[in-house]
Amino acid sequence: MQYSISVVIPNYNGKHLLEQYLPSVLAALKQANTDYEIIISDDASVDDSVRFINDNYPEIKIISSEINRGFSHTINSGMQIAEKTLVLLLNSDIKLKENYFQDQWKYFQDPATFGVMGSIWSEDGKRLMDAAKYPVWKGGQLRTTINCKPKNKSTSPCFTLFLSGANALVDRKKLIKLQGMDVRYSPYYMEDVDLSVRAWRMGWKCYYEPEAVCYHKLSETIANHNSKKQVNYISKRNKFILHDTHLEGGTRLLWNIENILNLLLRWMVLDLSYYKSFLAYKNIPANKNIFPVSLKKATNDILAANKDTEKELF
Image (tube, rainbow, N blue to C red):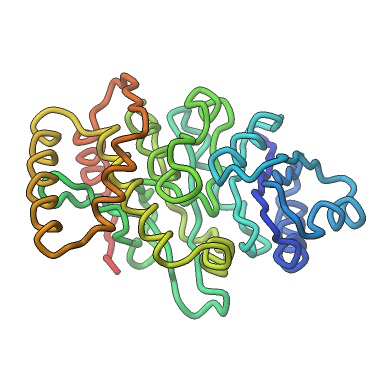
């Protein structure tokens, strides 16, 4: 089957990144020999990003926001005008290898596939930074940052807890059915985890393909526009939102007990930032959608499926 691709790139004051990395995206799309479109979703940039695209890449579609709204809103805006069968959610600071797409088509032959992500390497290509995400439970909390990769180029498919929002190739119809990213996570962090968890809970599958290689200038946009303190606050808040959204039954009860104990402990050590994150999460409306699969079962299914893949954690 021939697939077409809509590339959706969120942008905020990233002219220098578009200049540097767009050529690699175009080269990979041309080598894929498929129908494609590129959509730049601009989040109220005040640099010359939009003018640069109009002057140098007139074929690229641009959708602009008048106010800065964050990653989820920006991705969703681009997704809503995408027309191809697959959507590549791509950070502006990603460089694609020319053969990036060739090993990903096979996954979409399975109608249950939600999406696939490639391996993310450091800009110099010396260090593997992001691979498949290995779900690990610690009490009532799900750890989402543990990487694993197949050993010896295993031929068995490797599942991942979530697809990185930096390079996720997903089924457009399924993405629309999930209504895209959850904007409660704005301005950034955990929205890609939540999107993939919702996909797993729908009974769909997320894969990792190590041969689909890209290079990432990690957190270029977030680091340049936010203080470390602000980033930590939002990260903690969004972890609360993720667990509140998806935990059920005994796991949810355990998580609530752990939260009470953590609040007492943080008070004793005067960690007011923890309270700030907790109170901010409490003020965000809950989103209690009904899914056919529980988060606990979904993570168990991922671990069981990956038993056929010899892997290593890193």
